Image (cartoon, rainbow, N blue to C red; front, side, top):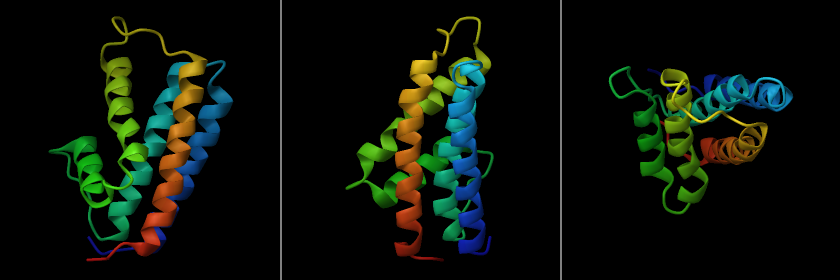
Length: 133
């Protein structure tokens, strides 16, 4: 796909909107809020790739997005990226095995929203500095 800073920035706006919605819903719909927070993180990582003209296919899914961005930014930024993989697993647990998974709590949402905001900040800073293909 063609590299597009404009499309990448639009994804980051969506990511910020999802984070705001997650914060608002945390107390009344923690599971929905968690899903929104995770999706915000996924959009931020996808924006980094979109800016370069790259995108994941359905074959590798969200794991590929994480691995592609991690390969470019870790080190030194792995500590900001790592929560995504844990959140992906937690979101899948809630989404696909909700009767077996521990309930998502507002505190869990709040803690991970903070990590997602750091990931979005990272994407906003990385996009202008990364090569485009």
